[in-house]
Length: 370
Image (cartoon, rainbow, N blue to C red; front, side):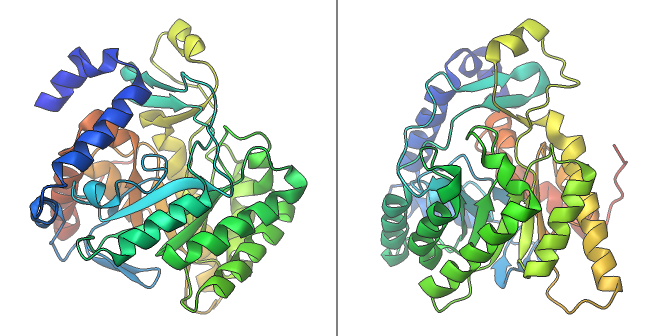
């Protein structure tokens, strides 16, 4: 057990999870604001092993591990988080309008399962404020060369009939500052959002976002969609077919789950936590299954002679160890993301995982199936 894990289990786990999150973000940002410290730390933590570097989405990633959306909703800590060892940071989810999210408490730990339940509700400063922040960061000379994804979602108060217009507004503001853009239709915490995963509703949404992104900047911004682990297998394959049909650049799989099956935590504790999306170790099995489904569909398309430009798969959900990450790469992911792993592993965890993953990739070590 690391020092952080001892502190977490004995002290941090007793404090409200959202309060700890904000304190951690403040601490990470403060520690890297001293002139020269951020870049020095980044040089020590950023993966340099050639086995980890990859070209994807028209971008160069020095490592395979990135930070999933949800941790830095407002793009306030990109460089500080990158300095921990993440090769890329996905900010958001950002909505067209600023919104406070759901009432607190709304972030909970299930420590026995190494899981988190959240019903944050897309609390964020809104697309205009986040775009301005990203623009200022781009102008700063001290910013680190980190790949930045932007994850966009629907504003809660916007009627479902106006969802596309809401996503379009966010896209116009944020696309110029995104290295890649992710359409989030899979959070369980915005009423009706997951209904947008149905192909007949997803097609016009993704097509509209693509048009707006192309109009907002001369640079082609890669566009991906993020899906839920709770989709049935046929629905996952239908999304894969739509991605191929529209020429999307990739899929982020998966978001949090509403399932509570197979948990080790006391049922009374789980019931007390209540509704929300579950992330962490319990999602790992289904996240891998979804990844394999998507990979198989894309491989079939390649076998039929589909032109080059195969969609990139970013796998997220239950990644705690380098072997977890390596298993996803072997299963067809190009990149992996984590969130809950950072919460339970601490600030040294990203760099440690990248180092261990480099060894596995370089030596092509086999993994045992789950």
